Amino acid sequence: MNSVADSSFYIFFYSDIEGKKYLHKLIRSYDFVIGPKIKNEIKQEVYGDEVFFDKTKYFESEVNLASGLKIFYNFLIENFDEVDGEDIKDAEYEAIGVSYVLKEANELKYLILDDNEAYKFVDKNFDQIKSNLVRTFRFICLTKTDTNKLNEKLIYDVCKATKNSINNGNHPLNINKEKWKNEIYPLFKETLRGEN
Image (cartoon, rainbow, N blue to C red; front, side, top):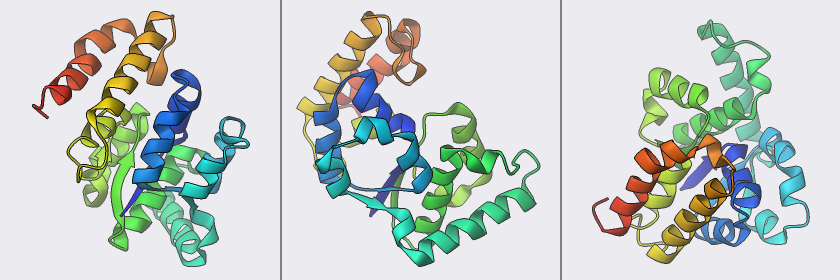
């Protein structure tokens, strides 16, 4: 089963928390698929990272999948007034489209979106992929119980690195100190205590 994430997921690990080693553990344990727009948005971060290129699947290399994505884009433009040709250029919509095509083939595990607008768009309009929709921090917490692929140490390390980044004045995934304290840290704490 495949997982699809928007570029913010990858940038979070490469830049926001400088946790490339955590991302490597994730992409070794899960099958991640990226499309050309996402690949372009993260090209500086992944430049020279052989593990990344070795372990991720490139969506456009599959002709049938790429044609499915074009059909999906046309479907969006024709059926949703809030979506136009400019929106389709955004990597978030590529991630949604790749997920939709994979779901139709029964090959989607997770769609990881942190952009609020894109997340709400999927949640409101796509029942078929809504059950696969998660944000980065929820995905990280799910790795604890998701077929026991990863251990608590990864979750703890990502939690600590995120907290350190926030304490240094950064806003990884647009998380400020208040949101960290009230929403994200309790999620990590609950997961590490085994209540997830």
